[in-house]
Image 1 (cartoon, rainbow, N blue to C red):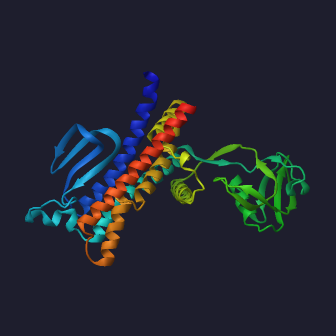
Image 2: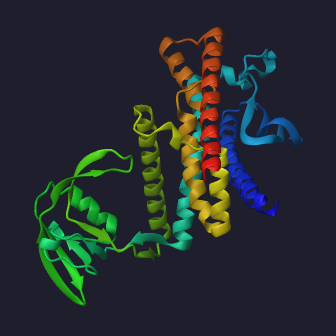
Image 3: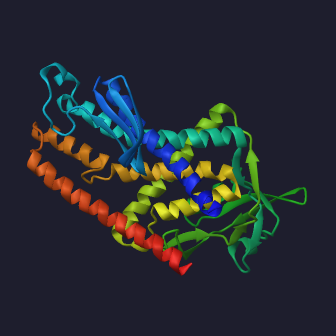
Length: 357
């Protein structure tokens, strides 16, 4: 039982924080536009605890796999004339788009704040530019590069971490590049001519890329950052994870990434528990990545998700009138079916992983 709690408690805490930030985004922007918020719920289903403060009831519900903010006029119910101006449905289209988009945006903000905090307090981890292996007969080998060499400069560019080397080689277009190496306290200069080879990217696709035949030593260092540098690196990391997640979604629709790789709550719970048991500090970057994934998932143009609502509002802007209730209900039924189908797939994948483990 205690082992199970190691997985359940961190999972609920992490998911609770993600859901709270998401729903708080909707709540805050709704309040900004003076929309009446009837209920703020963490979780779905039966109410466990709740308290009404002012006009809003704050609730924790039984199923911790989501949450919602219920606003006046959101479901086309009848509204007394005195409160019409506080109804969600009576807001200008741009206000409604802002309220719908605020949840995912707050998930991006959460990830950004987490990354900034980690880099400010713990430093920014980099893989050093030390060579760990040189492939025989490779361009690097022919240029005299040896294991243990530290690459300090490529042309006139200072190299601070390994990914700078990779980026420079990829942009070389196969032309010769001059490297300055540090070897046993001495600086050595050499010219390397990258060769284009067929390799597999992170999605398993075969691509052509210029290479010189070196592998990093794997040594990690942490750089102390100023608050400004931490903010800059936090923004870069948030964008990097966001771009990779969007690309993964695209590859998923293209069939490059198989559906069996998708994971759901069970997999997230396992990963959360494993990270918490290994080092509680590992949960923070993991939570930031999941927060970005949650934001992008909610921005997909699927009815019942925030992205679906935004799509409806954009169509309304174009046609100059709201989409009919009948059409919205039909679209929401389709969206709900797709969401249930996705949940079924990820739960199946999670169970298969457990059984075959």
